[in-house]
Length: 398
Ligand code: PLP
Image (cartoon, rainbow, N blue to C red; front, side):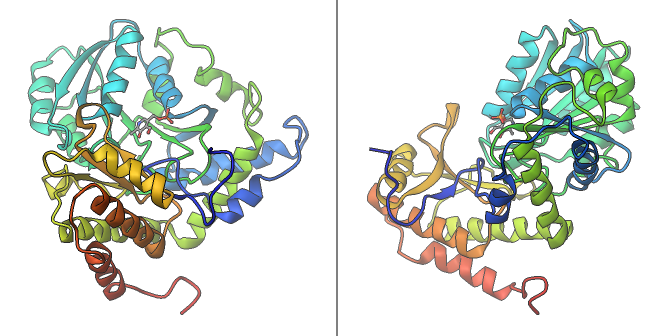
């Protein structure tokens, strides 16, 4: 019976949806209101401006669609490309796989660079493909920045470098659904053309907003892009601005305003550093348990989530099942090709050391439940040791 919540709370540590800050919950808890009244336009214009912080853009335009991240993908493709256009992309997990599937279903000609699930974007293969494309038939390079299936963050500056070294004019489209707002992402500096995130990840809101940053080059490409589009047509939004072409999700926009205010108050560089510390503590916990990460090359370590392999003969799904059934702890299952082989601990968004310590504590119990004999406190201890030795007072409390 899931209708009556157990005592305590659900300890939510999947890599999205994530824990929503109390002040964000309160910001969203409002009576209905009319977005055609005069308050809305300055409010919405301000949110579109403030959200630029997480993309590190001053040059890009931002758009906020009522949608999940998948709609953001669709929007980026439809507005920039035409049927049959060639796109190069990487597949190294379930999300990059689904984006490929979407590209194919929209009628694009997709060249997929398959990489091991646990590796990031293979820049050398990209270089080979782009250097052979003398006639610049490739219109876009699309990369999932943080693959949430495997806990891998690809090296976008390196991808950009390859494109620049060949003076290749393809657009650079980035899925930043589980990176933007948590990890260092530099829309302007990396010359990204479209970047997409979703509200239920680093922004720590409910699902329902796809947030996009768009370059001038992408806006230019839109003028000739022939893929059919309607709900996600950028023109409808740009022409209505600062009104909206259809009804926005007003409570979520209030939540976004508050969520951005929290990130700004913390200082966005501190937000990025916090994610690194929480991730590093989690990685140290996995090591203390004697378990391996799915990512092998530390340059691709993700600071959004940690994906941990279980020993042969153990079903990782049972660990996740026990965690929820016995300890009210939600951690992520292995998806698709790595189902049963890994589990995922999300540490992105509104989170801190003691919260992640609770996730590690619950995981230690669930591991022992299925016969992975880890010493109680070993992972928690390794994380605490790292966090305590690198701790500083919270801003304003020193
Ligand atoms: N891309 C990545 C990297 C994701 O992690 C997800 C969802 O987890 C998606 C895309 C799809 O986003 P949504 O489920 O919001 O449509």
